Image 1 (cartoon, rainbow, N blue to C red):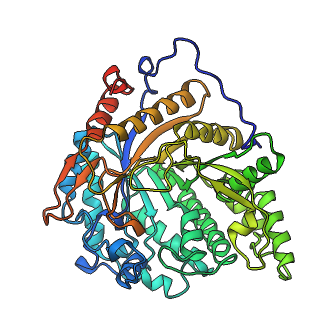
Image 2 (tube, helix red, strand yellow):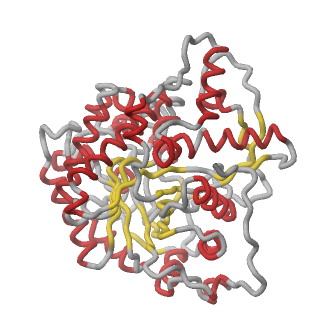
Image 3 (cartoon, rainbow, N blue to C red):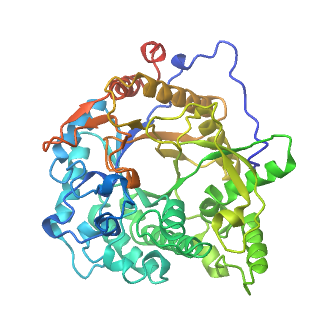
Length: 495
């Protein structure tokens, strides 16, 4: 397995200019959204409540100014406006998610909401009519509340329920959808939703909840993949994966062995937590298993707090992704942080402290988002070397602006441009098998606990105007040029 601290990279040859190089033929140029963040219509036409409806309606300042996604971008009724934005960019691909509770109000196939089916049918059909390939995410944080009331991702029963939902979607839309993502960012769901409790469903169960829910999400994903493989693939010819988010990590002191080892643990407890079982072994990284076992013993537990897969489950989980779906935003420096606490936690088990290098620029509106384009190249190389050179799609990457955001976002486009340069290096110098890039996001939208205070959109949305008009930022105009050229042009380089 490749090391997170010892990767080597080919330097750009003399005279290498990114504007002289095209992206591969057929490269997927996309943008992404998620149902709760853009649709609104939270209780329209038979939609059932989900955990984010509940979380935001409870108030308590857990979300900026107690804002909600009740209306958001209004995409449930303004899909045609979104389509205009997609066409204006010239996107070849569009990634969106299905609202589970809009299709199945209580999360089960006991009752199907036909108006929800009709809504997504129209999106898919409109995209295809305009030669735009849909990439569809089954689950992007918005679990039906009825299922959460029964234990949600903490319950072993969720794997069967998710599989039934996935099969319903494959059956309803799979004749036209050929790129599927089962679960978006299981790391975030597990750690922030069931460990820290800072996002929906807001459960705080440190050191236990994240591991249990991650365990069930991995099994649910694998079960859905096998259902597609067995029941739908031969006729529909699609591909199925899971969207994994990850930072890149570098040791704070590259010469310090303790920092080097901490960096390996950081990656093991982030990307490898999910990628190792799904792409390589069917089981968790050895370093993760040993860390949690040792910490559990020290804290008086009779067995490890990390659940174990059976041998049969390992065989079922291994190899259940047809491509590598990566969401990347930032990079961290890492140093060892010895765990001296008796209380269990994921961060304590990891024994790795993340450090933000303040010499790096930061995206406005997001104090966590250090802009490190070269980190993406190194992460792509790490994935290539660690996970058997898979086909990779970057399914999210973006930079925020604070509200109010200038339409002439020249600085933000520079971040995008530098990122695209690093992607070109990964493809042309490192031989990474990268097939597509999706900007987060098509529209300014409801950014979870940040509400509408930070803006990631290629299109500005005026949330104070009931019509919710969409206006392109400078970044949208420049991105459209890149797509049209299938590469960086001189004009985009000189901004």
